[in-house]
Amino acid sequence: MKGNSADVKAIKGAVESKDYATVETKAKDIMGTADKIPSLFPKGSDKGKTKATAAIWEKSDEFAKQAKNLSKASGELAAAAKSKDDTAVAAKFKAVGEVCSSCHKEFRADKYSE
Ligand code: HEC
Image (cartoon, rainbow, N blue to C red):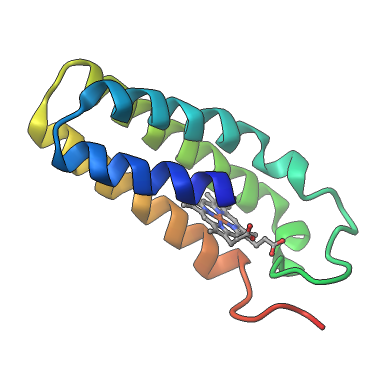
């Protein structure tokens, strides 16, 4: 997840400077992480200091769907960057951010558990 955040920051800078090669590489990084998200939260990993909520396991189908949405959105961003399409890059970058926050809203607690 920290990697995701670094990738998003790098993409933001690259979108602004129209460095589409970087946008494409970083979007593919996110895509690779997205596919692994569900396996990063095995059942019972809500122990210790975490913001993971029980909903991850109660609604594991929905959680996996959000991870898939991220994979899809970042794949579309990579494709838009590849074709150097300004409008599509801006729209797809926004879509990626929306998937991040929609999953966090549903599955990430505001505070770390004690
Ligand atoms: C499938 C759901 C899901 C998606 C999609 C998702 N996240 Fe997360 N994210 C989580 C959960 C759950 C946590 C809390 C993890 C914990 O505390 O153990 C988290 C935590 C984080 C954190 C806090 C630091 C950390 O390592 O815990 C950052 C930063 C973060 N996510 C960034 C992102 C970014 C950027 C994206 C989009 C590119 C993204 N996330 C997409 C579920 C998701």
